[in-house]
Image (cartoon, rainbow, N blue to C red; front, side, top):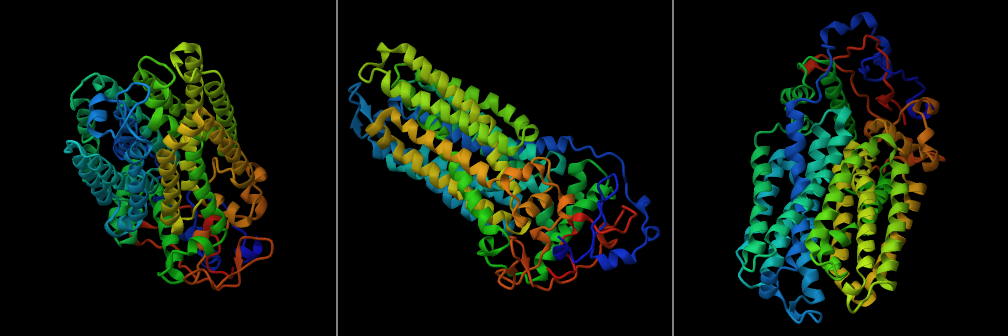
Length: 596
């Protein structure tokens, strides 16, 4: 590690978590007596305050909007009036109107095409206009899409186009919701707040199922227009409420609004502006911004592949988000009503509510699992569990269910529902929330927005492919489709074992260092920064644009051979002062002021 640290030994901060910053020369020049720790407020922070709770509910509503739209379309496809207006074929089992595979696939899947484009556009728009106003903008776009759908009388293309427009809003929110929470929330509860996005997705699905159950017996257009109209409530609350929220402090700092950023951090921590937590956050933001700008401000997009260990991480994020979809969860959420109607259940809407309830309830367990059992163990165990559930579901559905009259095998249908619920429980506690946590943790700050957008785009691409092709595949191989998802679950377990590093309880700097140094994933849970000689993280290494002026060190994913510009020590300007009283270089100071 000395080759990365310039030969200096880093020391951690004393109790309280505040660490000195700056390069080694300046740090040694400062004596403890020259720093006055009494200038900073060291009282306990009140992180679970009203402002944080409002942010939890209001911002996480972006997940609720997506979940609600996902859940309602499943019920619409079986409603008599919706079928009468938009069907294009006859159901061979009932003799009534039905959807062809192409039309049902397009109605369901065009939302995902919109979300793909929306998530790619979200990052540059948010960087230009700010996080909170961008969130309001995407909520308005979603409302436009709902208006397009609800005003149609008999044109199925208008429904499909409206879902595409609504998908733009959902895609933008799928990037901005976790981004705003991770940039604004107190560090102690950041993981839980980001995971709450998945919790609100499950709540939205459950609420949509319940509303569909309440309206499905209505033979008029109210059966589907009413649930669709209720969908206005959530984006209206979120879009309007965000106007009264504080902007992301990291975005404000980058725009020179340092005093406003300081005030925002103080409010979310529930402390005065001179508190040491506020100073620590501001120092961290300043150091990372200085490091980004030191090698030139115009860093091209392809640095997400040329930066230290970035090809590995970028492709891993894309793969994890793809595998989250390929576990098969949306097979139940998009087509659950149709699937269980085919098993002979008298009211498949009730079954969907049961699945939605299991999904929502067990996601609370996921918030506990993610922080207490580790990312790797949880994902591997969850993948194996889902593999077993799909093997049973597919086998029972193909070999035991009566394909002509499923009512003749009610116990088989009940068994399929049980294993579907067991599958949903496993997904909701592991792959549902934890993938979002890992994707938010493993990228350095300078690349996080681009990498998260790319990974999220992967999620939506596979969401579209599954939702569009499911009717064709089930028509050809019936419930054997479950074997495909079972195989993907086995692949997911292997991917996590061989490629994902354990990040539970680690700082973002530690996680970055582990990837940069090429720590073996199966040994990562026992890795310690002290044993490696300290931290080196991507955010504190300066590159020429494109990261082309560096070369790989032997046996490392770290880079060598570039002069790194010196970053000045912290000053009292804007309250960024060293309150540790040590004058020592923190472990997270990385390669500041040294040759890498």
